Length: 248
Ligand code: URA
Image 1 (cartoon, protein in one colour):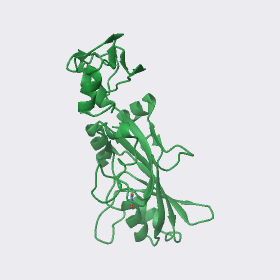
Image 2 (image 1 turned 30 degrees about the horizontal axis):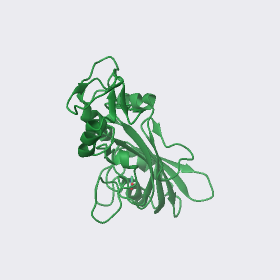
Image 3 (image 1 turned 60 degrees about the horizontal axis):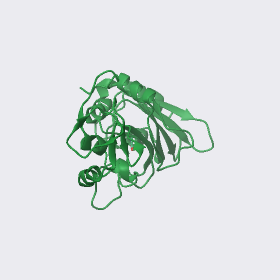
Image 4 (image 1 turned 90 degrees about the vertical axis):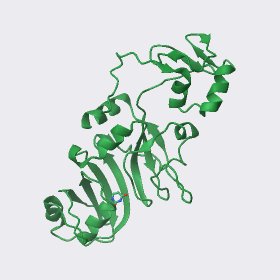
């Protein structure tokens, strides 16, 4: 079970681990930085990488800048089209490749998957248990998608979504919500509590519409910021992280 620290418990960690958790540099470079007195603890240079510190209660400075260590980091990426949701790939650019270097060193994992041509909200965290539990259909963490379509879905589409649609290959989907969006182009919003392969595209195909563009707008209590550019990333606020753990 992953537990969000209350802030009251005292955590003791190796100094080099604190820096590594925050993505400051590679483990090797962190050791060198410590040896060169670039890391200070409570106002004193600390040359022992293995010494144990309280990363919340003590003041750790790296090159004169305060280090804010956290047990759980959660970031929101507005995933652009054209990158795949994976931590590494030999051929294609991944969501990790487009993150700032520091974040690339933080052992983050994507919370679920968006197709290469899907854009929108993708959470990334160093808490693998949180990532896993947020994706369990049992937890009912809902995800909202906006789909631009070639044409509006069949008339009975809402009802079929509500009842739990069966896809062409026999896959049974949990009940979902379909809402038609009244705007210039055929558009629909879909809310799901699960994440089967190409699920939104396949469900919409089953009710007569081809998805032209797909964007995830929300996951549980976390919304994609309006006006956030594709490729932009921000850390979740403490309040948002607490909401996520509550959903978990
Ligand atoms: N459903 C899809 O079809 N694609 C995604 O990327 C996410 C949900």
